[in-house]
Figure 1 (tube, chains in turn blue, brown, orange, cyan):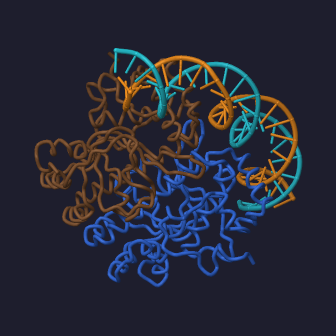
Figure 2 (cartoon, helix red, strand yellow; figure 1 turned 90 degrees about the vertical axis):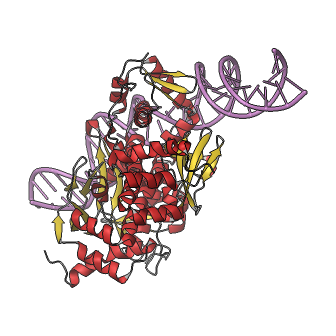
Figure 3 (cartoon, protein in one colour; figure 1 turned 30 degrees about the vertical axis):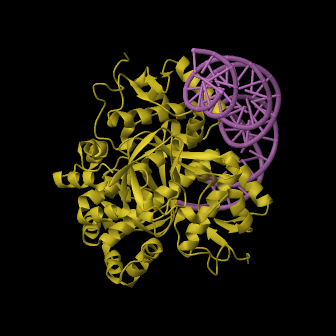
Amino acid sequence: MEARDGRHCAMTNSLIEKLEGVASLSGVERRVLVDAAVRTRDVGPDQDVVHEGDRPGECHLIVDGVLCRYKLLPEGRRQIIGFQIPGDLCDLTGFVLGRMDHSVGTLTHTKLAVIPHKRVQEITEQYPHLARALWQETIIDASISREWLANIGRRSAYQRIAHLLCEMGARLEAVGRVKEGAFEWPVTQAEVADAMGLSHVHVNRVLKQLRADGLIELRERAVVVRDWERLQRTGEFRPDYLFLRSKAGDQGLGQPVA
Amino acid sequence: MEARDGRHCAMTNSLIEKLEGVASLSGVERRVLVDAAVRTRDVGPDQDVVHEGDRPGECHLIVDGVLCRYKLLPEGRRQIIGFQIPGDLCDLTGFVLGRMDHSVGTLTHTKLAVIPHKRVQEITEQYPHLARALWQETIIDASISREWLANIGRRSAYQRIAHLLCEMGARLEAVGRVKEGAFEWPVTQAEVADAMGLSHVHVNRVLKQLRADGLIELRERAVVVRDWERLQRTGEFRPDYLFLRSKAGDQGLGQPVA
DNA sequence: CGAAATTTTGAGTTCACTCAAGGATGGTGG
DNA sequence: CCACCATCCTTGAGTGAACTCAAAATTTCG
């Protein structure tokens, strides 16, 4: 609704920053992206944005909030495929393939910018450089899925969770959401379990151990990284697969915790 | 070397068929693709085509053979991310992002068509419809990775392997490589283990069980599907995530075994 | 303040792992 | 053509990481 004002500009900033990480946009392209969203949408926690099998007519850019992609299996099992944070386009699959192979749901209250497929279509036709940037976005998603496969397939529960925390720390830092070695973590232990292919009871025990080992601290709905070096080593985390441009900033995870 | 002859035409056919599954190409676009490969390359078994971290200057289209994408982890661990069959483009990531996040290696003797990035660049600029088709290819890869995450994260070893065999059966059928309910399977049990996040000993036991239960048969380097219905049910296999157009054909997996 | 969701702990179980070794298979060279 | 070596498959035995079930403690939220 309140498109094309100052607020809207801030809205799409995190996406633009992220796209620039691999693509470096021109002024015109930047303008185009800012104008792409026709309205915003506020969604409560634990709501689905799209379902597996849907043929949506619009894409969603996350302005604020945390979401997850997931698949449901028989007997109530669930696999979370990835977490989505501000700046992410969470359902480009629906645009490119016309059908969603997975669902996307909110974990927190979320603000989404809505971009009609028609708009995306026009943009990709008129601005090849932007089309390439969006293609890159989807391949980075794929790269993250591949790293998750290695994580779940070949690492212990302890390593897996360490790796997940590293990934989220690195990604949140890239969009300026890490302050004094800490970041918001509105994800329940049961959700971590569904993401890492573990039981929620075991996740609880592993988190306890990570705390006991002085790697992290959990405070209300946030993670404080107490030893970024060791957390990375534990999870065998190398950020290359995220294709981020920027390194750890001033407020970053490499810094001593306040 | 021997580009632009009849043989070459056959070479890129399986890709074209596959792209048409979601994109349906025009005559001109088809011609463009056929001409894209400048030479072919023969590679022996267990050779790497690209390594994680490489910045390759060309893409490879699989004409014949089976390859796998994989990641190496410390202490000799390996995670296989996916298997690649004729018609697949195995390293578009290198084109889109400029750097490989994973390696690609052959399992068998392999014939590859080599397409310089320059060529791909021209094609995507001049033929938006083809660019979209390639984008779709990479998203289907991502969709497969997501399904693998659910497979490894939430299914038992027995289900996982059943699911893998279903996937390979369905994909090979789509490129005409299933005959009388059987397909080539030049993959060792250790490789299945690295793909499914299991030990090779356990893979051996599970395959034994699948045979004992009358779901499959293993003959020299091939899989015979004895009960496609039950194999799918066991693996909770639903082919939607592959985005294939065609259903089971005459020689297909739905048919009784000779 | 009470209900619901989430986290935590205990106890017993199991699926898949590791280690070890014996067959089978296939390719290579004498 | 056969002997040899390497790879792959198979089986046994014991172990362990992660699971399930159950219930209590804590936090969150209407």
